[in-house]
Amino acid sequence: MKEKKAAALKYTRGKDQAPRVVAKGRGQLAERIVSIAREHGIPIHEDRQLVEILSALDLYQEIPPELYRAVAEILAFIYRVSKEL
Image (tube, rainbow, N blue to C red; front, top):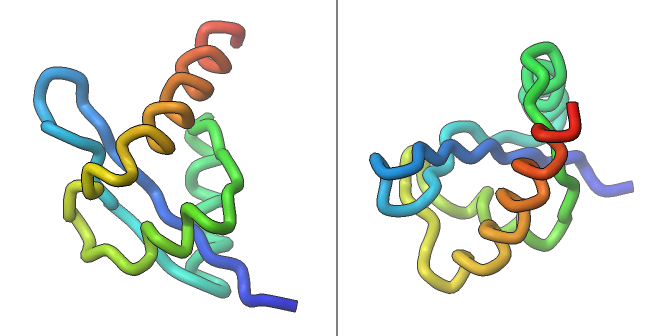
């Protein structure tokens, strides 16, 4: 079984040009990232391919333009889920 990985993005409408990677890790650190997100009611989206790419980025680095579409779809999902709560 592969080791669990997690990455967290932050996007502030109008402030940032693109979402930034604000946390990333694997194993116990990945579990802690997910746990903290759940504790704060932050929606979680699982995508193994995307987390692999995001994990390769530096912390606080803006996501590259190639990922805009994938991340935009996730952000749209999160906004829909947040409105339903």
